[in-house]
Length: 93
Ligand code: SF4
Image (cartoon, rainbow, N blue to C red):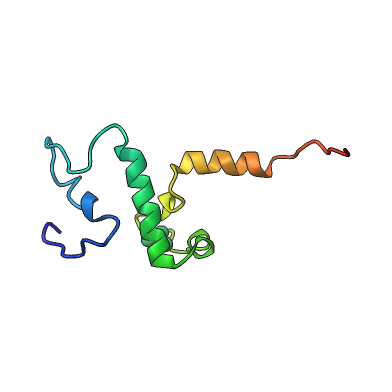
């Protein structure tokens, strides 16, 4: 893992984050969670090939990134989806 040569991988900088208990990971700072989600999204876009393909990804149990494939926290995605599909008032003009 440490010697992984694929520096083009969006997750390369995160590969040792969990393996360093008590030490500061390479990717740290107040915006680290957001950057991690963005990098997961980039990885999924590379893996699947497009937004529609990422949405339809069926790797549910097989891939550790599946729950985060939209680049947001799963609970955020659920809230946005509920808001999007919620019934709305009909506007006639
Ligand atoms: S969740 Fe799907 S698209 Fe994302 S990395 Fe895993 S298999 Fe690829």
